Image 1 (cartoon, helix red, strand yellow):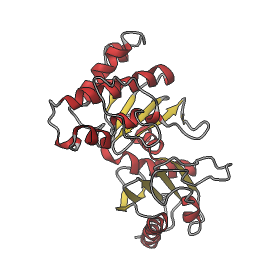
Image 2 (tube, one colour; image 1 turned 90 degrees about the horizontal axis):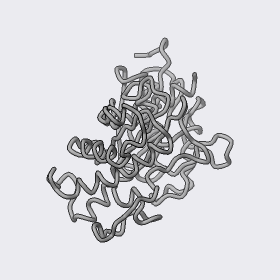
Image 3 (cartoon, helix red, strand yellow; image 1 turned 180 degrees about the vertical axis):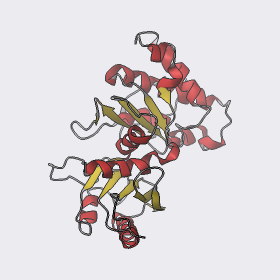
Image 4 (tube, helix red, strand yellow; image 1 turned 90 degrees about the vertical axis):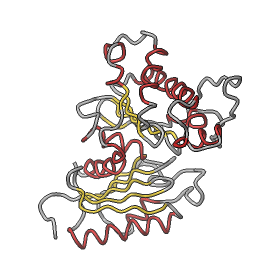
Length: 302
């Protein structure tokens, strides 16, 4: 059935493990969705192109496409490497011109940003950041990354934030694990990502009991990072998603420890009295990234 009245948007949530592609307008109007493994750029992007061509045949021409991708990447339209994946541990993807692969087929606006900035925009548009001017979306899973929405717009700066790679205090007498990050060893991602949990304890995080010592250590590292972000960007809210970050038994530990670390220094009732409304789970659940890509597409034509 053709849709000739409401602008129709394409969205790509490009993860290091899988891609999710969708066509729609908002959380209540997703007309088609598919997912497939992230293999090589050529194969993966070809699958995305084929999906959108099929949906255009069914529903009519897309107004724009939003692409929220794993990184590092170049989101600056004025840069020579705009639309490319920058040097990454992901095999085959370094210097891949992923936006160019879309533009070779679709002559429409294409918005390109990090997966976490996309998820942040989705939460601002329809989730737990509606009405806020400054907030952070953090994902903790296979990797750790953060998107920042500051004074009404997504933060890019030099390239884009890399919140998962800040250094954290690491007491090696209590935690001798060296860290999983191939670039920095024991940065935030190196200490607190899903792979770090598995390598430290010998089993996947979802196989550890809720009372396992892993979760107090995990909460400590996350809280150290959140306290630093709170001092630096003064967000009105911090949203935590991802396979590890969204674990319901972890969130209260993170809230409590962050409040203890800040120790009354930030004199806001949100932190002093309502920490559970300051550090929250995504309102869109695990759909933040996919819907964020649609929000990027929407923003590209407004």
